[in-house]
Amino acid sequence: MSETQRARQERNRRTIAAARMIDLGNLKEAEMIELIERLRAGLDDSVLLNDEVTE
Image 1 (tube, helix red, strand yellow):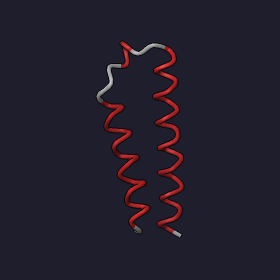
Image 2 (cartoon, helix red, strand yellow):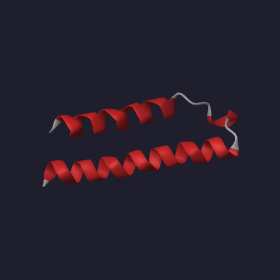
Image 3 (tube, one colour):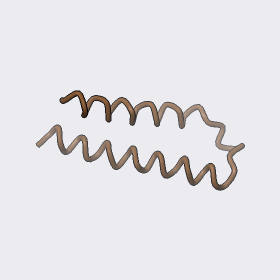
Image 4 (cartoon, helix red, strand yellow):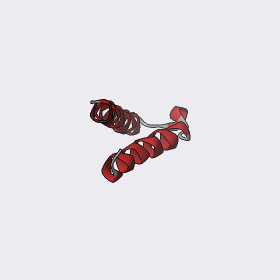
């Protein structure tokens, strides 16, 4: 795995870890949408990264 790929993996892990600490019950609608979009982007990147590493 390249340094760039490791950095992407670490960024995705930090995004998930940060999301786990958020109290979802206190989020406003816009904040919830932003959280979902960040997680969606991280998931997309993780899948792409997996494809890159396994090809």
